[in-house]
Image 1 (cartoon, rainbow, N blue to C red):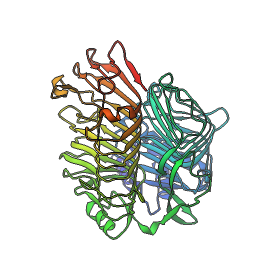
Image 2 (image 1 turned 60 degrees about the vertical axis):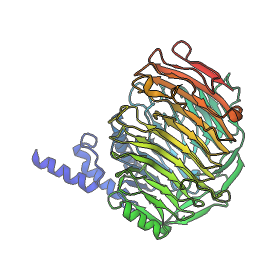
Image 3 (image 1 turned 180 degrees about the vertical axis):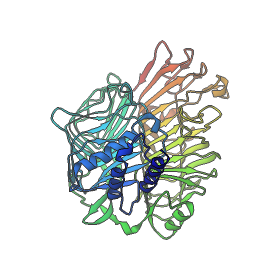
Image 4 (image 1 turned 90 degrees about the vertical axis):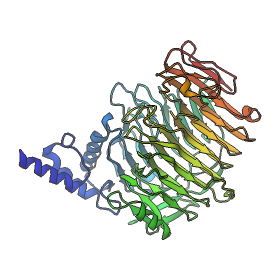
Length: 584
């Protein structure tokens, strides 16, 4: 018995992906070791699998299934493993199964360069409930569904789908509860079945048909979007996306890896990839420093940035004792495989100077035991430069305060610079997991915007202890907002400020003279106390009419709790007897 255990440990160390023996049977470990060596022998390291269309399809499916069996169960929600699965251009007969911390990517210049003849699967573990199906991603490939099959992309927050072509139907649920999600720059030939999704944000996507929706479904720059009849139906439709640059994507051109950078678009509709790579810039892999969790730390990462390198951050968990400092205009930081960056000393994880054209994408940012003032800062306080000609973009940046373990901060993201666009973010003070409680995982605010001309597409912000979102800059634009207030104020008085009951979820400060927002869904679940919230949204009266399509919902909790108004004392209330209220 002892010798068998020793052999098993040696094999696990060799493959270094820490798949437990319960998930990889002892009899198949040697075989899986060989497959791992075969698919992870690239510059990206041990947690990045690269597949070739000439490979035996059973081997590829074996890897996918093995990783899914490890990453799908709910116990992996706060697990330590991170993976990226990359597919070279070609055709594959496989089913794509995606669990926690799994990022699946095609390496073609167009999504149609990587064809998956099979299904896309992200399911709930029990009773179809996918409200905790977080931290997974799929992008830049085509799914050709078998006859009669429906792709199941049952997800909630932090699960983006980008540059995907579905030749068939897709359902955004698993016949149970769902609380997602984000879809951009994609083409769905068939029907999207939203089912039990409470909310969803779709941008620049070509739809065959959209069916269903619960409370707050938003479409920006989407041809054939459903008809907007708010509040008789839950749809908010903006015909054109005013300003966007699609997320950069990794390609393989011959034997060379590159990162394509899509061009800036104004007043756009539909997908960006009709004309393959037209007008796009690209960066060679030599322009990047490849960051690996078993090699790098704050010092080595900053040293690479000082040398003028961009970063590719590979799957792993990075404990950073100093902030990553981004000081060079045009820097690109590209995360693959859901890498997690955690503060060790109360430092921000990343600080971006007040500079032009920075792009950051695909990161999870965790608070640490020592409280941080903020975890992620764009620009210094009182930044005044205009970046309108070369704005910065943040894609798929996710924040966590607790849940995985002990974590504390004052805020998650602070944007001081002007002309910054955020395309999908989830800021989350954990409501479940480890080290969760009113005095355990403390954090006042999710997002603070101090800069002017900041735009956010798809803002998910939940459970913070004061304002979930605090907007101090002028000319801000927010397209889609999903927010749950904190579950756990222990008393009524613990969630008051002055004579005001509770904190508004969405707060536009008194000095702001111009601001506009569309599609705001705000929900409450006060389990601990009969909390009274005076306003779920607060704005200066002058901008109140620019807050469009609002819904508040009393989900559950103490039966004496109440949200008294939607905005500035108007609309509502909602409580256990009347659970939903809407306004135009």
